[in-house]
Each structure stands twice: as C-alpha cells, then as structure tokens.
Image (cartoon, rainbow, N blue to C red):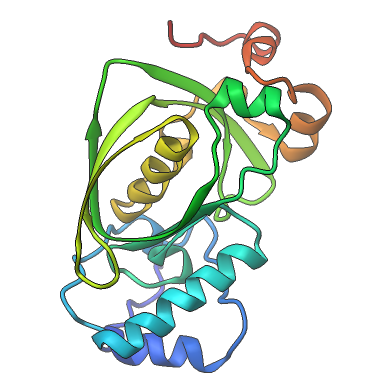
Amino acid sequence: MAPPRDDRPLAERVEELLAAGGPLPIVAAGRPVLRRGTEPYDGQLGPALLARFVEALRDTMHAAPGVGLAAPQVGVELRIAVIEDPAPVPEEIAVARGRVPQPFRVLVNPVYEPAGPGRAAFFEGCLSVPGWQAVVARHAEVRLRGEDEHGRPLDEVFRGWPARIVQHETDHLDGTLYLDRAEPRSLSTNEAVAALWAQPSPQAAAEALGFELPQ
C-alpha cells in the first residue's frame, strides 16, 4: 500500500521542513514524490518563505555535495531547482565534458528544448540514487526558459556540462530520474566508476560493458 499523500498547504509543509534546521533530508528513489511531477510555482510560499527555502536547498546541495537539487528531492512538489558547479576537475576532463564553473542559480518553472542537433554521453549520478552512476546521452545544448527566484524571466542557452545539469534538474520536476534515460548496461557503482571509468570519455566503458554511444 502506498503511503498517504500529505495534502496540507505547501507553505505549511515547507515551514515544518525548515523548522528542523540544517541540511534537508534528501528523498531517495522509490518515493512517490520523485515520480508525481510538480506544480508550477505561483507564489505558494510567499517571498520570505521562498527565500528561506531556496537557501535551504543551496545548503543541502553543498552538504551532499552535489551540483544541483530539485524541490521534489526534499519532498516538495514545486517546480523549483537550484544549480551550482565550481567544476573542480582536471583540465583534461573539463575540456572533454565541457565542464565550466556555473554560478549559483535558482530555476523557477524551468522548461528546456534542444538548441542544436548534438548529443553527448557521460556518466551521471544523482543524490536521490546514492551510490550509483550510469551513462546518459543528453542534448549538448539546450535553451532553458523560466524565471529566477525574483520572478525575472530566464531565457538562456546552456552548453556542455551546464546543459547536462539543467536537463537533469528540470527532469526531476517532471518526475523523471536520470535512470529513465540511462544506458542500462553502463550502470556502475561509484567505486567501479572511480576504479575503472575515470577517463574523460565513457568510450572504454562502452567497449567493456557492451553498449553504444551516440555518434
């Protein structure tokens, strides 16, 4: 039997979540909140509570640590996510993956679409699927539309690793996990990735594990 859904107002639930202080608990795969999708943000929290919630998302992302976090990952079905990536990787990997520093950003009601025909495949993980990674082919460039936390419009093209981050986090808001888009034969523990597949490209993993990469 599925757990009962919490139908209290979102503002009340968020206040309760924040009252505990510290990083928020991250919801793991298998919980319905990660699969139901979200409702558009339309002032449900009010400016002050939204600011506190965004700061808690940022603190939780840093503590995990991760480069993005979506509201459903802390049990809140709102179309809000945060991203930030200092890109602390060797230059060879940064160049191969298009990984450049991404400042802290708040994405409110984001949607994306391809901004070109290119696709790129790399190992990807998720704070809601701890301990595992898999190769995911994603759009190399996307156009992201939405708003920031102050209601200002967002319309921007992201490339490389930042494009992967915004696709991953926006997918969370639609009830999609990276595993839904992953190459199943590539699924590896974090330990296996570190020991065997730390190269800039997943080509060696594709050859050894028997899966195709996009051309």
